[in-house]
Image (cartoon, rainbow, N blue to C red):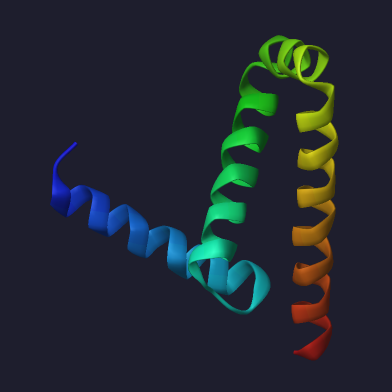
Length: 81
């Protein structure tokens, strides 16, 4: 992947993070990126996500907490509008 595409994808992720939760930072972008990746895999290959959840139960719990955190931030942002 070339640098231009990396920069453009980073900009896309930054804007998505801002629209999703109302703010952006490197930490928030990283959280949203993990959430997007996990969500996509869970929807497109559920057996793989299940295997990962079974193999790494503590990571599964961290992901559940991350999803809840993003959902809360999204709901707070929406309620302010």
